[in-house]
Image (cartoon, rainbow, N blue to C red; front, side, top):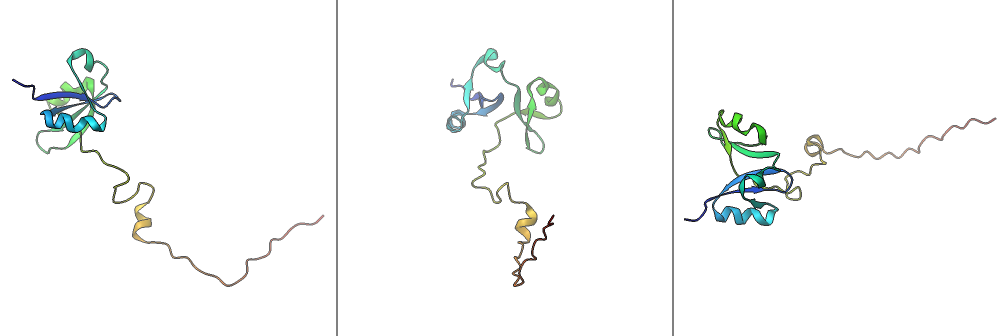
Length: 119
């Protein structure tokens, strides 16, 4: 029988549990790699978990996974990757700037002359 669940790591200390070979193969080009055995999971600092009731995902410290499992959180796949280039709003634009663009005022008066102090 073929293996149906795979532990994967993102190479930065986070691990996730994915279901099926198709999901495993989908995450590989995104920088995730399969890890096998307890020794391979020793370098993991965080684990992606999903809540059984509301379905939200969160990354928890690896040492606290058992505590959170008692509260309905179980190992899962990571959330879908997002790209800042495809976002609705760029990260450097504040919501107030998007809602109300600033109008530039045009003045025809010359700027006041700078006063200098002579000795």
